[in-house]
Length: 372
Image 1 (cartoon, rainbow, N blue to C red):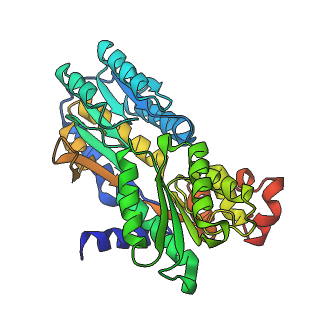
Image 2: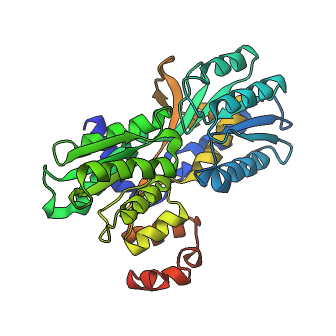
């Protein structure tokens, strides 16, 4: 089985289940790692640098789950020093320099600009501070990387869009691609995965790389696409994430489109799940941010405390960045979220309650799809 087929097989197998570290033996490794002699105790400082706030996941899930896991792993003795760059690469460089100056024990970095932050990663390394790339693979001497299988994300999105078109899909059907930020290496992988599924099956009539992932920029790009293609000639829209999907929908509605084409997304934001319930958005990609954040905390603490067995068990994969090869990595699986599996994903995993989704505005739509 080739790598692409393997990724697709993983996605299919994952579509109706959640994933745990126990299933791949990592919890066992964590337990046995206590036999190691830690180089540092529990009184450690972990730096956490997140990229922006436009996507609600970072403040709602990543930071609180990461902080709680560090506290749990260090018996409430560890400290998390947190900063959010608010989509400003220069601001993140300053934040990272501050953490280097403060001599934190380890930095977990979700880069705004993976390339420009490379010098800061090297400075941290020179200062003896390991850096773990989180969600986006930064350049420079990274100690480990944890993220989702980003090319698989794009494949799941692209395949879902083709499935939404059903038996009527035709190579002449015009698709608009609203891709992520050009400074985010993940966006390139999402785009590559989606393109591999779309090419030859539909026509990619317009494609945009969206600055800073901002919904308003996605809206402007979609308005341009509508002007060039015509509002009635768009069979579907590939949107790389949910926030931008909201901008896409606004542009279509402002153009007078009442029967929306299928639109993809990513992140399972509450507003997107509600749009999926109503049918405005066809799908999102559900990623367990709590699992990613908690696993990143485990990686960071294990690295600082010198628990090599646990660290190696958590980072069994290998990835390459433009500057370094064979970086230890953990790639977390993803799930295609549609009307059919809302209960088995975001509700079952505790992301949202039915009451969060099915507010008065959405009660009728929820009842129609049996969500109660």
